[in-house]
Amino acid sequence: MFIDNLSKSKYNSTKKNLFFNKNSTEKFFYFLLLLVTLIVVGFVFGIIIYLIIKGAPAINWEFLTQKPRNSMREGGIFPAIIGTFYLVIGTLIISLPIGVFAAVYINEYAPKNRLTRLIRLSIVNMSGVPSVVFGLFGLAFFVILLRFGKSILAGSLTLAFLVLPVIITATEEALKAVPLDYRNASYALGATKWQTIIKVVLPQAFPGIVTGSVIGIGRAAGETAPILFTVAAFSQPNLPNSIFSQVMALPFHLYALATQVVNPPEDKQWGTAFVLLILVLFFAVIGTSLRTRTRLQKKE
Image (cartoon, rainbow, N blue to C red; front, side, top):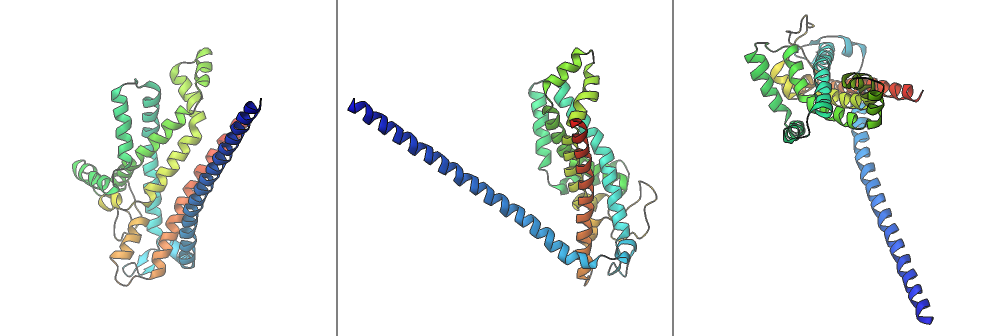
């Protein structure tokens, strides 16, 4: 009897120690992950706050609505804002349908074999290709081979190839997240596979698609290398009149101010960077609003 009680006491003691050790380890990693997250978020907010402090004083009506003058040392950045807006819209118009339909095919129609796995691997690897490679591809294929010249069309096509992997991957993950029961219920009601995808699956996956599109837009708006080879002009005061026009763009304008203009005003550089940040946030807010609105409609 005494031996049994002693064994139970040792067992309970061992179990209690293991419980405390497990909790201690879990708490340690929880606080470690929390610390790392706070450091990363702190750096991001620090950069944004610093950019606001340095760039906001340069923002005025003339800076936002005037053309650059005196080798970009004076005037504003209105042509660069319009050029960036055109490039982002053109990129979205080209990349979004292609990316969504490619993801639909890979997730809903493609057979589960080695070729499909190879395609997925290729898409993932494309995300890691340096943007300058896309720029050189756009120069060789769109500008020279197809003779589009340095134009909005060539720049938008190049940026579309750049963001396609992001949109395809995000859309495919959103499609996978749609429960299989939704598809089966649609089939039970007599809908075809295509009708199920269009009317059931894609509306449910819409928030994820919007997220991928916003990420792609942010990358497209801030890239310099692809537009350097395909569309960007050092100085183009006149606004574009067709898709074959060259344009100024905020990323390249910022690069030119920092590297090619002699004694550039510092406030112009920070102001341009601040406007670029605001433009990216503007598209992000639109995307977030659409996603939130869709989720609220689902709950209703």
